Image (cartoon, rainbow, N blue to C red):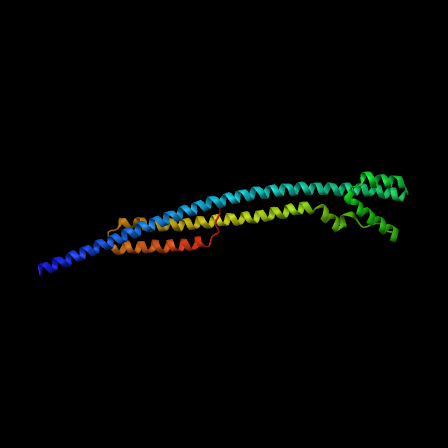
Length: 221
């Protein structure tokens, strides 16, 4: 009877040791995975913040270029309006040499079609030509470059907002990784096998949830 009891005691002790070893291995594995996951999230946060900074810089440059092009287009409108006034005076005075001089020397090449259109309207109807600032086609051509830069700046700004959101998502996931690290790390502080298993389960669930979040995130190179 004593030999049987001793064998059962040894068998039970060996089983207990084996369970403890499994718990220790699982703890180390979870700690390793959570540590790698946290490092990956921190790296992605850094990368996406860098992307956000680059996009913000590019957006600011595009807006600056857009402002410059807008100012240039506005100056062209003012210049064309002044030239049109002089040309109209030459037409009224029937000063052909002045008209020729203005067309060949003063008028911008891009504005000549507008003058020709006005001249055709006057010759056909005898009425004043349409207001320059109401010619949408003319304005679209002049402000096309400014509008292009503005659209580019808006697109870059939107991409920057996306990059910032991705960084925030990775930061949130880092907190879940830290929680998984905590649950796995404190298992050694408890002697109760049941408590240690509960903590490991909590760590595993938290780690799996964090991993599922990472799987849906874009990766910054």
